[in-house]
Image 1 (cartoon, rainbow, N blue to C red):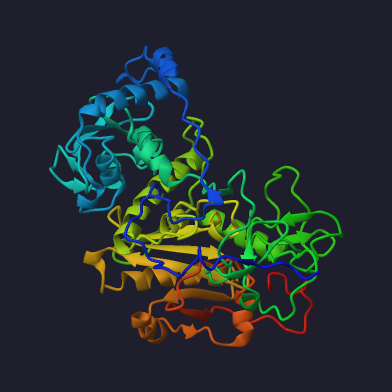
Image 2 (cartoon, rainbow, N blue to C red):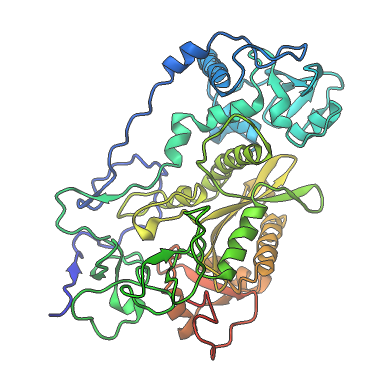
Length: 520
């Protein structure tokens, strides 16, 4: 028999896509009754750990000798005592903070206090090499009254470890700024912003598929995948004949042979997130690193290229730097080696980047699941629902004097396509070409990774600017429209114009899919 459509026009009448509130805890009265966010398991109390770890009074005494109980358990005890001590601090509303730095985030979170005294402590000797007071712009040096960035304060103190947060301590509690960053990151409010978008069908739901089309994000007459929650309008995927019996969506079939069954198990590429058979193309699973697999060498090179860039500041002109970020939930070991230090900085700057994005855009809330789209993208939050799975996103930031002034979100779907759904600049830096600088950095990176096309959304008022200044073109060619329908790109209302730019030569259409890996 013919495949049965689901009709939910009454539930999914088109509404405003842009919401006025960014809260993930908004009322869900207008969301899908068949889908819900399961209640979260409460975090385990650290009270017992704190009681066991509360014996020592400092991470390192000033003579350079290790205090008893030093280690990750001891550091947790220090952070917990500092957390109790800071309850008297008044948290500063983040909206009132004029500069977006890691220090302003820590102050706004109430983890450190404005004008709190800090020391720079030598790693080996434990001697105090510099003193100052922390503020939202940096550190006010006590010896010269100069306003310095965190890195400048380290150099001013006679060191250049490139890990300044690790060696700058609060004078009162003797907790390092690095431990303060971990404390702020583990705060309940911050944790809520990055939680997995755990949208699942209600236990008694008759219909367990998504209520919005993967391509246009609208409801109506939808065809459902038999293997995942994804749904589609047949017209959106250019389906001319409705299939008989079961049907699998483009995300549940091999990207090469188009078959969802046979030819062995399907693997998911860690970069483009498409499925593939080993026999059809791609690389074998890395048994030393099981979660990582690639559909081909191009996706491996893109993945490795992006991960090699993570957390590294790239110097530009006029004191500007740009950095690629991605949130990670890997546990902290307390060793604070180079990679762990870099992960802590990435996570902290992700939190600051979200504050910048929240200034620049109205909260975009998915009307079916109530997921905050912009927030989910910045924190690269995953989901079992493919349409709101943003785990593959990276965040690019432009900084000057430790202040994040421009932010962009990018996702690479393989060598054929990358998307940049959001790019925003803080108000005082607009019309100064900051977004232009950041966008050029992103394009250069994509070109070096041999990504061929960049797609962006644009409101109609800015379409001319993107086309004239940035050399984008409208997505009009039928072949390109069909190709885009096979990718999980962020969708916007029909009033938003989709633009694209060719970054590299198009592949030879006479080659097979295996030879043109990443084409679909």
